[in-house]
Image 1 (cartoon, helix red, strand yellow):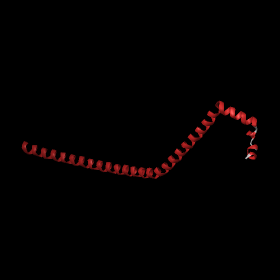
Image 2 (image 1 turned 60 degrees about the horizontal axis):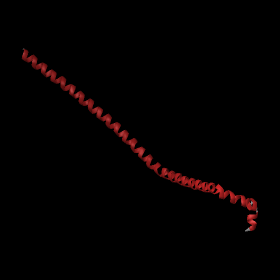
Image 3 (image 1 turned 180 degrees about the horizontal axis):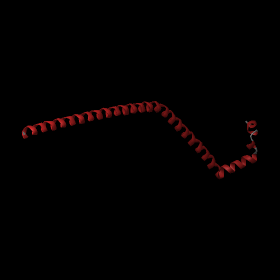
Length: 114
């Protein structure tokens, strides 16, 4: 073990003393903050990965939903066109009946007026 630590630059007794003083007088909080930041980053990365997996799963469902909405819009447009055609047909039938009624009334007025 001594050979492992002796190769490190902090293995000298001067560095160890300085390191201990640093950790006691505020360096410990810096180290704690570094570990907190690393832990928070790992949690955020895990959340992002989970979100990407969920997004990939929802992507297929979203695509199917978009297709369904597109089909419903097409069907609604078709129904609107059909309703417009019926409305126009009904309107023209009413106009024809109105002309017929006017013609009958005019014929009756002529017969009464004679």
